[in-house]
Length: 95
Image (cartoon, rainbow, N blue to C red; front, side, top):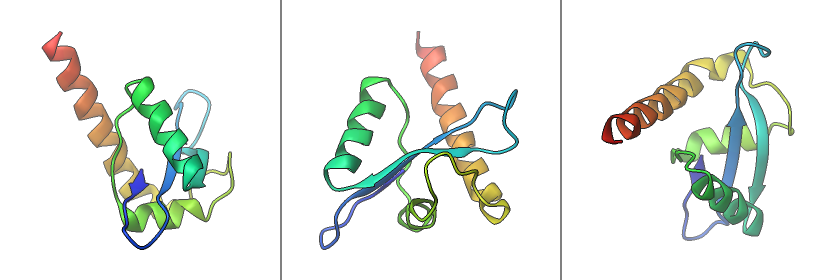
């Protein structure tokens, strides 16, 4: 997730989730400025969909790396994962 802004440094938070070993998504990477650009570059390099949501990135950037997202963010993060799932399905259908 990214936070584009003209007057603020860009922020990015990467989430990971493996339902076979985790109860909820975790923060895999987080940063601003050059670090955020590197996170986005890696996402693009590995064809990981990016969802832009300024409010969500602000909330998630307050978490530590490997920290599980709090329960009150489950719904909105579930929507992000649903978006990623739809993008993946669309890409599979195109190939």
